[in-house]
Length: 160
Length: 265
Image 1 (spheres, rainbow over the protein chains, first blue to last red):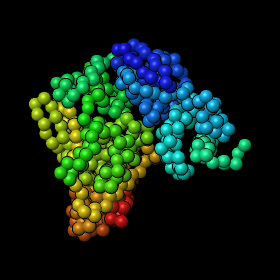
Image 2: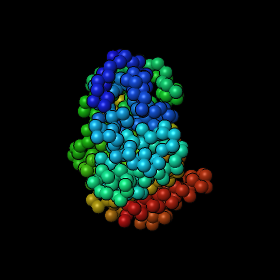
Image 3: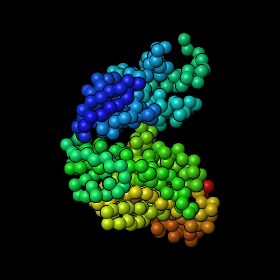
């Protein structure tokens, strides 16, 4: 089936089988390999992308279902001004080691902070539960998202 | 893993969906349970009928005092509904415990009920609220009580040729409070057990448990006891008395007590 999907503001077309997962279309059809594929059963969150601004598991959607829709992947997160505040904070707070889970965390948290700019630590722990990281123990991720949230609110949290 | 091959149809109306349904077909709503089952090849349908393009199935509205929730209503939309939060707070409490935001953005209310996971928070809440399930097929339409719709793990009263189109939740008695308590190892994980309660000032109550049996079910003994003036602890003991495993029984009792106390507070 012929599909046409907008990803990060650019149009991509491709022929897919009905069973082709969106995650596979993003990686192999569009060649955007920033989105990672982990468990393929909706548990790990590594394949999280945004569909019309909402975070979703791209391994739990068929590529044909994205026909005519608009997606954002981790490649679309950084703007002309450089890295997104979340990306910078993950870098600075050592919120990643191997990095496989990072795109999923970034895409989840970008959407979450838009809806919850004043998030507290306990809520954040719950919000992070939808993404698994096997390296960091999560503390660095928690701190990175808090720093990014403060920066996105326009606060100076005292760090260089 | 990847899904097995299947034929795919994306009809544009309920009337076009119905003739496609049957033993060989599976309905694709939010896909948050079906697609993992396809990926794991636990489900091997010949035909996947995608109802995401059917207009009108995602409405949240009030009709004659009752809440009507279309089967394709995303769980995130239910969670964000001010109407639901104010007038059916139990549903708001329950839906926030379904998976994670990334799941609720796609997952649907009808899909949750039709998939019938034994730990489905929405089924449990809908049973406690006395909800009714509206089904349609080429031969007609019927309505089933939510408590009689969910029958066992991944097993419902829906016939293969039927489509779950809408849920109907009756108006709650004035001053009724709601409580939901569950135990899961981590937030968003499948819960081991849980309880939902709605209690009106006169003691009229709806109580449902998940994790106490093969499917979420009403705890009628606890409901009657509350109407007769029993304490939350006494009602909770009745709700859990048939659970065989000792740990699970203690868990069900405590969660039911918390849900009832939250509903009364």
